[in-house]
Image (cartoon, rainbow, N blue to C red; front, side, top):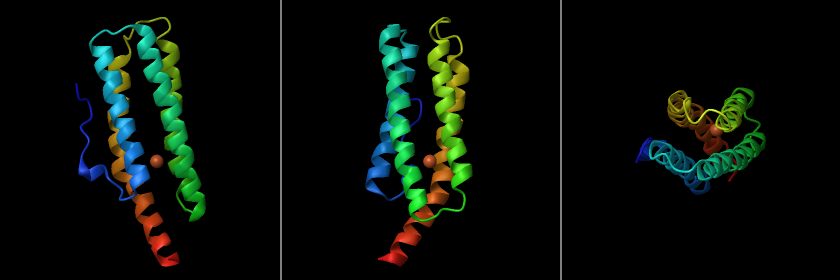
Length: 137
Ligand SMILES: [Fe+2]
């Protein structure tokens, strides 16, 4: 099941970043499918933990890149990363007691966060990043 369909419009033009963004979208789709199909909780917990760890690693790389070009909107960008991280950690705790009743709200959040972040926040940053790097080269 596809919850967020990957599209060329999400590409930033940096191979590593595009691959990681795609992996994040794929992982969200896998989580969505597992919840929709009522898969075992232990498997779902692993998927949530993977999303938390993988996004953390990806955000760290992006934040390093922001420092590299002394990006002016880094604080705002980092706060969106934190919001994602906190929401996922919250969700991982919720699922310990209530079996997935809050999932609709989570997926609403994930959809608007991923699409908004890729289309605006990341787009803005990578445009500046590529510009700064090309003027260095
Ligand atoms: Fe980002």
